[in-house]
Length: 415
View (tube, rainbow, N blue to C red):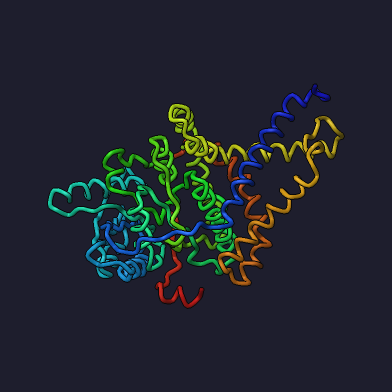
């Protein structure tokens, strides 16, 4: 029985928030360990390594040089740079560094998703002349790549995986507090989401770079992922077909993180818009397919897509809670009926997990200092999420400028 009239709204809201919190909390602990794996270390699969680049003259040369030094037979991979609507000398630099450059110009279809779709079609055409690949490995122009990346992806492919995401690390985790907190967030997600879900048989989610997809999947189901978050769109489209994304923890890609809060805000705003867009288009289909296939992985994908909605509800609940503190009780808090030990564990866990992960990734002391700013990073998501919801139908793509230029050799010196 409801004690206050507003309980009619607040009790269901609190129950939903509690269930979501416990769901993510429990799954997160499965990312604190890794199962032993006997790896297949004999190179076999042939890769088309793709880099989509729009005006990336500052960083593209170092990446192409890095990719040529991967610990994988040179006859089993080719490096393609998609110079997409470039107005600078990205194509020239990439060509001089040793990449195979494919220039694309399109005034209407402007995004990484369209560039990749265009390139996939070119790869399919190449098969007619005898150039056949088993899979594509996709990177962003600002990346650096661990030498073992293709060996690790080869291992996963030989074990039957068809869509694989590599470990998303940071190229510049110690440049500023913004890049530092961004790096911490990625390290946390790598463990409590991607690794955790792979450990228990659920699906990871593609992260835009460090991705590997088999050619047969692309040919059979098509790419058709051209929204602001093309990686998430393709993940969910594939999951609805029963194809999960596997996590390759040792296939590491180092991504450039934003240096300023403004850059961070703009980038996360695009992600929020894209996730709302994908959620509203795919959740109905995925719920239906999940029931049809009796596949919990698809339903878990729906829950992943609902994370921004969960954050919006959390923000609303926090605001109402502060109003109650200021004006007196007008709804019943279900948390007052929860076991104290459970609530204490949840409170400690949300701060302990990032600390455990910093230890696991052997983070420098500076990262521990940046951990003080981590709550600011997390809570700044709230206004970004609301703005993303309002702008969810805006599909205009905005380029992120990358300037952190370094070779892989120089990068290793600073680790």
